[in-house]
Image 1 (spheres, rainbow, N blue to C red):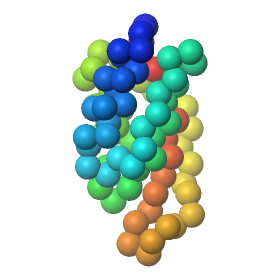
Image 2 (cartoon, helix red, strand yellow):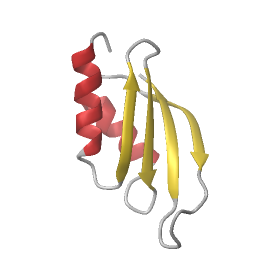
Image 3 (cartoon, rainbow, N blue to C red):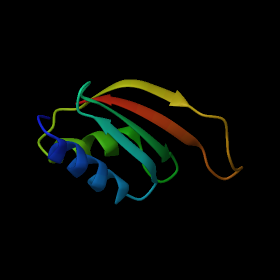
Length: 81
């Protein structure tokens, strides 16, 4: 990831995926933070979607957040790009 266009492209592509609630990528640190509904999408799906865009992504941290609704489990995924 070498430019702000790459950052925007990843964020935009991720927000189009079902279950992605937030997508934030930082060019300076080459890291991304994604909040998602784990009943609709998983960490592997997010990594695969990023890697399709020619970025080499790996999970840095996976944190489970408190349940916001009984039906949904939200998680945050931190990714190094």
